[in-house]
Length: 472
Length: 53
Image 1 (cartoon, rainbow over the protein chains, first blue to last red):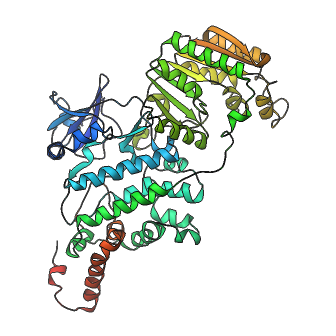
Image 2: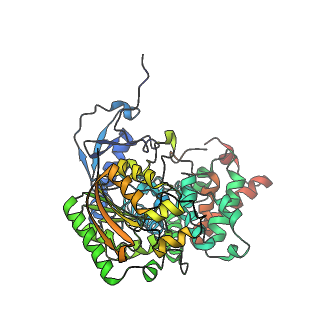
Image 3: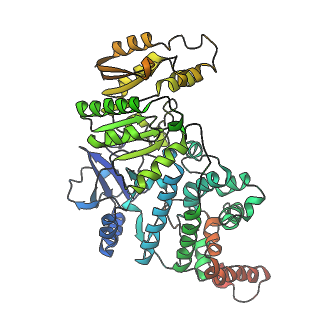
């Protein structure tokens, strides 16, 4: 007899919770529930919390649907019920979020937990992978996390909350160390003992440090190898729901006050520094606007988005824009501005396109590579290629190969070696390190891979914009 | 120990919650440690604690 195989369409990152699995088919997102999972959903649904939270935009739109249970194998013991969720336009992960994004996701998680507790429910886990962003609006997606709270039981997700939300935020706020590489390095996050080892004597006196880091690390070291009934002991000592609420409120205050505000970074003052005159900037904006109108894209990527000027232009017409910048401070500022505007069409992310997020986790498939989360119809590469090619050492031809495989159309700006911005990068290299960084070679490579629709020269000939469609 | 979730909540992390509740948690923390002290010193009723849960 053949061993049962995992059905295609099952979301490879949703296997951890035995009561709930996500399944995608024909662009729809379904959640398969076990008997227990269905009972938890009915409890949640009867509480009125779903309608409230969906109405506020905090929880993804969800409804129960009648589906053929052809996926019986997906849940051990059989599928008892199926939910359908609204689709998130572009999936992103915490190691691509900025500081303020992880902070807002943490506050969303805590707020939901507090409101669940009011209804006699609890969230059984606490992972930022249960939060997604619709533009700059965080939304909780794992309806399967809600379950009935049993009186006298502590919050099982507290440790996970610390490892994946609190500790990464503390690392960045207190030590000015960006958390993204740490979360990309470990899907479990940063343990209390690891964070404690990074903190100084002075850090012991910071708010929240003693309890959530030092005592937590100490108790973890002391108890975690012992086979003891912590839950039973706590219940006998009178542990009650109010203590979880008090802890959650304390965490909300602590996280609400955290900030990461370095004065500046490499690119944070780019606009002040740019070589463009007002007139050229206008012509560039017009070129981008016309390109977006003529290509009619659904999904746009803006790589090296900086302040998001062109992302905003793209969002006037496109359905959704993913605005990426390698500089976490620049991306964080963009996020905060977009969040204030309640912008739900532009998703800001911090990532380096020369080292893009790979597949991670079990089978390398739990968290998908950037390129597998939705093919852009149009990609903006404005004032980007000199960074990729000179600073990042990626040959011009290889970058264009990658672009052709990635996007349908591209607006790409070639920054000539004579341009001060490119010149600054070239000055750090030996004279012959980038023999392929020339306008004629770039144009030859572009024409071999793309059909160039139109081009425009700016900045006295030092910069050229091209709109091009990938050859298939 | 009896499970509370499909994720490992960590015994240390569960005990910490008796401390993290601030003033509200004082009673529970005191009781938790008082029970332990009594157990170490073999004072009072300990049968219910030694019974398997």
